[in-house]
Amino acid sequence: MVGIIMIAIMLILRKSWRLRVSPWLFCGCVLGMYTISIGHLGAVKYIPVSLAAIIFYTYPLQVIAYRRWISRKSVSWLEAAGFLLAFIGLVIALGPEFHTVDWRGMAMAFVGSIGALVFFICYESFPREIEIFATTTWVSLGTLVLCGFTLLLGVELTPPAESIGWTYLWCIAGLTVVAFLFVVLAIPRIGAAGTALFLNLEPVIILLLAWFVLNEHLSIARLVGVFLVVTSLLISQVQSKTNAHSDAS
Figure 1 (cartoon, rainbow, N blue to C red):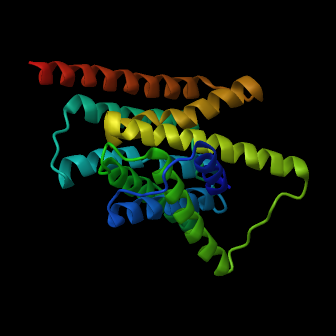
Figure 2 (tube, rainbow, N blue to C red):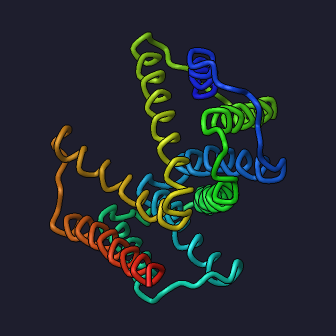
C-alpha cells in the first residue's frame, strides 16, 4: 500500500523515475526495509510487543557501534552516553514482559534491528543530491516485491474483514509514507546515528498517546523512562553544538 501511494505521488508531482544510486546501496536499503517489516512486525506473534520493541530498538546502539569499530569514525563519550541512556530509558518506559519468551520472536526482532542498521548505513551513503521521491518509491516497490515472494512461501496474510479496517489500513499507509519521507530527509542532514537516536522517541510518543487518548495507566517508572529518553536527546544536541563549534574553529 505504501508503494501504491508513492506511485500516486510520483504521477501527481510528475517526478523523474530515474534512480541515481549504486545498485548495491539500493539493494541494501530494500533488504533493510524488508527485514524491518518481516522481523519487527513478525516478532509480536511470538513475544510481547514491549519485548519485541526493546530488542528492535537496539539498532541505534548498533549504528554507533558500526561508526566506531567498522567505519572508524570518532564517537565521543558524551555521544555514546546519550545512546546508552536512550536505550535504558526505553527499557524502563516500555517495561518488557519476560514471562513469555520465545526464541523465534527474539530472533525475528533482532533481525529487524539488523535490517534497520543496514538501511541507515546504506541510505547515509547515498549522494546528497538524490531525488528523494524516486528513491523512496523504488525502495518501497522493491520491499513490496520481496514481501510478495514471502507470501508465495505460504505465509498467511489476513486482510481486514470490514470497510473500516481498510480505511484504517490506508490511513496507516499514508502516515507511514509521511514518516518515511521525513526519515530519509533527516539522514543526509544529521547522519544515520543522529536520526536513529531521535527515532527512540517513536515508542515514547506511542506510550504518551496511549495515556492521553486511551487513558492507559502511566506509572512513575515509565515517566522516568520517558525522561531519560528526552535527556539523551538533549545530550545529543549539546554534542552537535560542540562539534559545530569545533568545526568552525
